[in-house]
Length: 554
Ligand code: NOJ
Image (cartoon, rainbow, N blue to C red; front, side):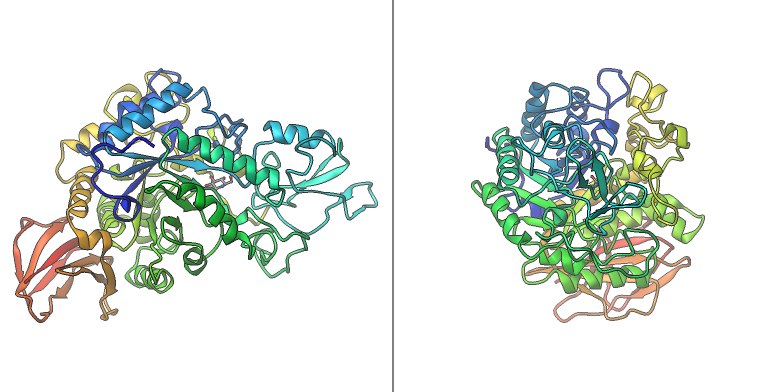
């Protein structure tokens, strides 16, 4: 791997640093076809690099050829770049240009399933013989029903609705899919699958990639006998099962160990597993060293002090003994947090919510993952069903909740004017109604904007070891609307205060031995200039959704 020039950190960048998720279709379109592309990302690297947000890595949602039935998570060829995003040479240029700015590249690996347009599946479904015959989960029907229909071999469900089994007349067998019918599940117990996937991993590493996000990684292995799952009460077919046999198998950590061994052939490579449907305890159990795992405690918490405290406590209890957590408030699957959190507190200054959420994201313990546009306080955009670009949303069975993820995947607004600097053509998905004001150019000029807040906070984080690596302790006073926690490394203590109530609230700054007071390092709405000193024993009054970061003075 070529050395990362200008990198600010050593091999533990994945722990100290910040990762920014780009949804390539929606980031920047360089050629006017309305679809974001790799050249567009290169054009905007300075927004992400040391002169901009100063992130340490970008995670690219899938860039591979795909029919696009699941937003690129239906991969037809893992080894290549979809021409809609650019050429192979353009990808190599992106890696080089990013590295020149000290930004690592993290690819999204979708290895649990492929598209049904993948060559492996096309040959696998054609016959029971051939090189890929057993690369997917094929089974004979349990029986033939009265109407002549094949009865699935077990009760496993599809997360996107209905049975997980689909009949293939050419083989006279059914195949399993956790997601869409067009996303057949790979059989990781076949040695050829692991070998092919790991060869692909090596190929991307050889091109300079620094890490991977592993899509739904805890689903890779199923119980070898494919027994039916126990059932329970629930809203839809997926929720009505205890997923004992279709995920989280005991031999899965060993598989991840084999994957990690490839990455560990050189230092500084990270990976992050997307935990599908599990809690912080499960996520922490699959975390080790530079293999991180997303947990959903914070993303699923409502915007109230008790809920955020409980989520922090759950994470702190789970991620101990060297297990390092991630911090995520938005991604391409969930409602954007500027909309989601503001909805939980009703009307009001929703940008204040976005600014306070930025403080949480960048000061709580763990590696933060930013989702493109959240630095602008971007909201979900209402998309009519006929404009939706998220087919799974229409496959859900009655009683199962899902939503149209098109809303959180709309194009990034860079500047005022037609196309918002995203595209000179017709954007593949409509832009938000507020893009004339909510865009990078306008927000850069406003020191109070959400973007300016992110930039200041990220700079503070980069210069503050306690915020990067410090231990976290929630204040024992759990009664009011202010969430308070300290972050500590030897020689530095940071105190974070977030008022999640709807009214002003006071916080009494208690004295700690050997400490003369507190210096204000950051505030989302402070009249007082950062750097001003607050004495021990004083009280700070915080408005609704106001957040401050203070440093103990010796
Ligand atoms: C997880 C991805 O984040 C999501 O977007 C996708 O729909 C599922 N995996 C299935 O591929």
